[in-house]
Length: 224
Image (cartoon, rainbow, N blue to C red; front, side, top):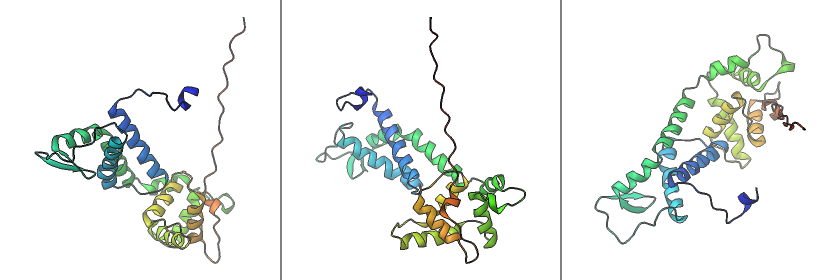
C-alpha cells in the first residue's frame, strides 16, 4: 500500500494498456453519472480527448505544428499524418468496438421481460418493489414505454436546477428496473412525476434494497 501511495512509484505498462484503461475509466464514469452514451462520444469525442491527454502527459510526442503533413488529418485540432492517426485509433479499435456493442445490446434489451420477472402474480401493495411501482404507473397512464415519465421527471429536475436531460432520466428508469440504485435527487424527481392526488410515491420506494454483504472467512493457519 505504501508503494501505491508513493507519488514517485513507477507503474510499468504499455501505451496501448494506458490508453485502453483510461478509455474504460472515462466511459464508466460517464455511464455511472447517468450521462447517455452515444456513438459519436465513443468513436470520436473520447478518443480525441485521450489523444490530447496522451500528448499533455508525455505519452505521445506533441505533433509538430510547423510541419505540413503529406496527408493531413486532424486529431483534437492537431494536424498529423493520416497513417499516424490510423495507428493511434487502431490502439483503441477493440475497446471502441466493445463499447459500441454494449450500446447496441442496451438498446435492444427487452425491458418488458425484465419487468415481468419482478411482478408478483398476486399484487400486494404492502410489498411493492420499484418494478411493481413503475408497472403500476405505466398501466395507470396506459403507456407502452416510459418516455412520458422520463419527460415529466426531466422537467421537474430542471426546475430544481439539476438540469438532467430526458435521455438521462430514461436511463435512470431503466437502471431502476435493472436493480441498479441511482442517486437520491433523480429518484425524488421520478417519484414526484409518478405521484398522483390519490397515491403518493416516495423516492425510497424506487430504490432497491441493498444486498447484504458477505464476509469472506479468514483462513487460519494450522498451528503446529
